[in-house]
Length: 83
Image (cartoon, helix red, strand yellow):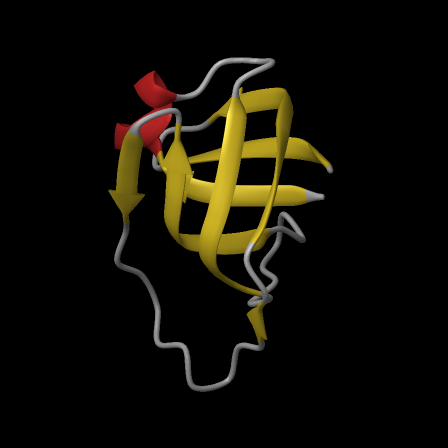
């Protein structure tokens, strides 16, 4: 699965780290990724703002290890293997 967060939070990510996605929405865009609004990386809790959620389908909380990271100018795309 592919997820998107703001680029400012990229420093918290690294391949192999365990993440817990607390709040996310299947608001697919041109990257066909899931928009993350709240997640935990290690002991850090991260929360993000974004587009309105009214048309997006919320997903259940889930967790996994980071498998790839693609940095962009405004957002970061990353993947996790679900556990």
